[in-house]
Image 1 (tube, one colour):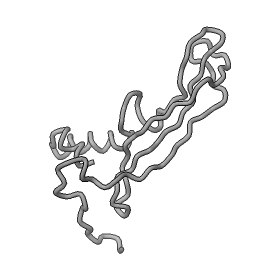
Image 2: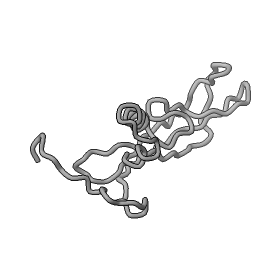
Image 3: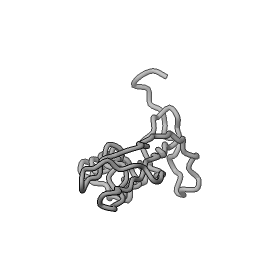
Length: 124
């Protein structure tokens, strides 16, 4: 494939999410044995491991969506008794199902092209 060559979107015309091709999975690890407590700044050991699936942008050659599976550690501070998770700010905001790249592109498409948010999110 040469640069500048137009390749059609294989998902064009699909109206149901179930008809999309299965996503490729990539794994990211944010699993730490110890982290500092954000409240009392003391070392806290890992007591559990969590998993979070995030939807990301894929490359055009794969013709499949990309899901990031983020494995992260959960910690409990023995000093103050609070629990907290390892941060994932470079991947996604807290509680989001989409990565920062998808959010940035969706906002840009909505602002520049004037598309409604639902339409823009379907394209991504």
